Amino acid sequence: MGWFTAPDYWLGRLVFQRALAAVYLVAFLTAALQFRALLGERGMLPIPRFVARVPFRRAPSLFHLRYSDGLFAAVAWGGCAVSAALLAGADAWLPLWGALLLWLVPWALYLSIVNVGQTWYGFGWESLLLETGFLAVFLGNDEVAPPVVVLFLLRWILFRVEFGAGLIKLRGDPCWRNLTCLYYHHETQPMPGPLSWFFHRLPAPLHKAETAANHLTQLVVPFLLFTPQPVATAAAALMILTQLWLVASGNFAWLNWITVVLALSAVRWPGGPPPAGSAPPLWYEVLVLAVAALLVFLSHRPVRNMISRRQVMNRSFDPLHLVNTYGAFGTVGRIRHEVVIEGTLDEVPREDSGWREYEFRGKPGDVRHWPRQFAPYHLRLDWMMWFAALSPAYAGPWFGALVERLLENDRDTLRLLRRSPFPRDRPPRFVRARLFRYRYTTWPELRATGACWDRTFVREFLAPTRLAGPARDD
Image (tube, rainbow, N blue to C red; front, side, top):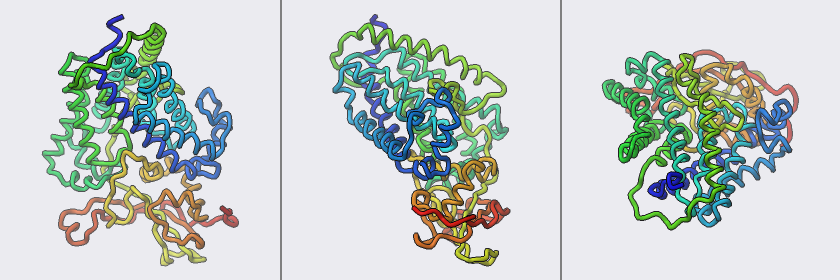
């Protein structure tokens, strides 16, 4: 079946696979370095409790068979190792069936993590990585040319990511329709980056031009992905340019990078003739076509969601995350609130006690602390602190456990922070949380104070709290 493969895309497949392996590597590294405090046996949302109440069929995971922190570490670091091997091109050294199995490993391992990750893994880019990673299993290696149907389905994912995000904006906040959302977004986004202050201070007409360009890229350009070359390549290039603009303006974990990876699959790269490969074996053709038929059938659910007036964002329709719906920032906040956590060594907490502030790695805190670039690395606790500031309901499942760990000076929890104000052997007696309104300073204020933020106290978020009993030993 000569129509089955697209030899001209052999270099595009290579670039896509190596880039996807790099995103996998970041995702597994994030899991390995943060899981103990978030999900471990003594974490804020322990996995053993989750698997005890949620059956395997609803959340397939290796950890339903057995859980220990050592096993999770092995899965996460093992995922890092496999991802690094794929980044180095290990799949090219294997027979076709071996390459497929090797690409299946990181998908299965990361699925096991996401399905027990609870709130900490409730982000759309988790499903996007899994959906993309599942399709990557069937791209093959140098033994065969890339299958046309898999390349088409990768573009279909990219279409849903961009077009779905565009629709959710038009149906959502009116500021997207009057082109004013970027008057606020760079200041109120979940985790600003080092350039976000400067993006916020761009002239209003340029903000409107940014928004109009976003609508064009998300609502018109995606259809060009399914046109002949070189138009499809030009459409993918526009999407990549837009995503790099977003990378520069904020910290969105690997959302922008996995979107770039998908766009790379639509590019027909200039290059020499493809490696001499053999005709695809029959079993491979049957397998790819069967998987494609399944994914096309499952796609009716995200399509129905996109055309619905009640469109939802970032929804997975099956426990394997095979076909999902995406979207972001249907509503843009006008005011930025931040939860500031403080502790004191005083035996009796008073307003004039020596309250000391905990500093997070990515979320705004100290008004003089300029934001840093962390993406594609994902600071999960910092992101959830942004949601907590939007509504205490988001903090319900885990915030109390966080406060408890801070009162204990829990080592794994403190590693998630930039700085704890208390020495290791002297935990605070009380911890409290207060809500502040943050805004970017103006140019004169920045020159006068050196602070990129100004903040104003709003209200108490959590009254001074202490441990009910003696702190646990590490």
